[in-house]
Length: 47
Image 1 (cartoon, helix red, strand yellow):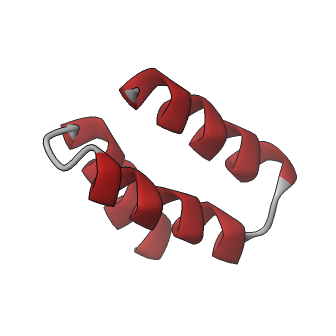
Image 2 (cartoon, one colour; image 1 turned 90 degrees about the vertical axis):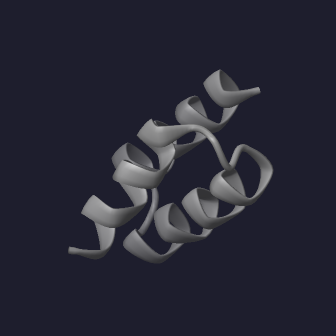
């Protein structure tokens, strides 16, 4: 499941808006709370 969220996040990063990327990452960490890479991507996108 984590791999699907990662692909969705990379897609939004490359083709979407910053807001859509943050929305995908928020949903991703809600569904995969132990996926450290998703948390780090979310923190980096806000910083």
